[in-house]
Image 1 (cartoon, rainbow, N blue to C red):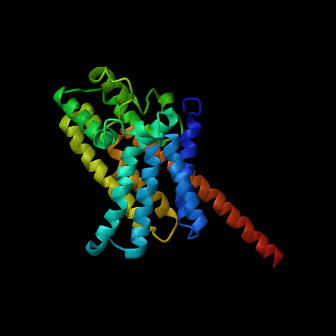
Image 2 (cartoon, rainbow, N blue to C red):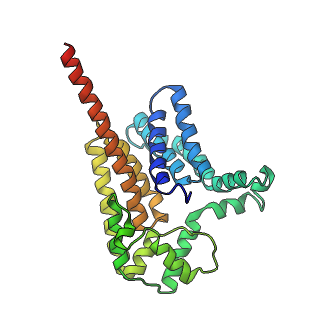
Image 3 (cartoon, rainbow, N blue to C red):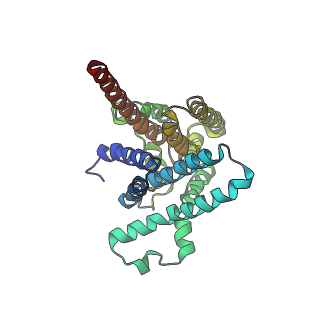
Length: 281
């Protein structure tokens, strides 16, 4: 991973966008190919991308069949999403065990319940938030403002910032005995930079940003834009709660620029083929 560097950050969004388009193609072999691509992301070590694929596919298929979420069909949705949720939580233990060759019987050593709790990052992220409050932990707001620069297609290090700044700071000060990288918590980050007032401002920003993306999703529903909006809505509405603000913006950056690049090549190819057709006629 360290040697791959930025190539992984570009390859993984491409992989999941491809998986989604394959699965929506309507042809069985492409659907199978899309699922295999999504499962590949888990084996590489990125659960979030598979979760993105699963949630986005569920929403797209669900809306295509029912147009709007109706109470009478919500049970069908739960029968799909709950097994996927359990698989995503346990997948870290599974792929880590396979890579370390510990044997199938030892993957869930300690019991299934213990593996599920340890794999559920929402427990640890909530504990991070509580620890920030209990210790009245605070940081300079300068680094929080630098998080917005993560939207630009350039490394944050050029501005003296970094997407993992908050994680490195609070982990070194509050969890120095933890040897692995911990998950983030944007609400804890907002509290560290602005106390309870920072959290209130962040709530307004979070909801308004969510509203804007939903508006774009509906306004341009007959274009290709809802594909991008569905992915970004997943990250902002679901996966966002274990990220720092800079990490969230980096996800938006990685997908948006690749999406625009794909649209550019697609539009260019369409224009060239149309012009050739005119010349031949």
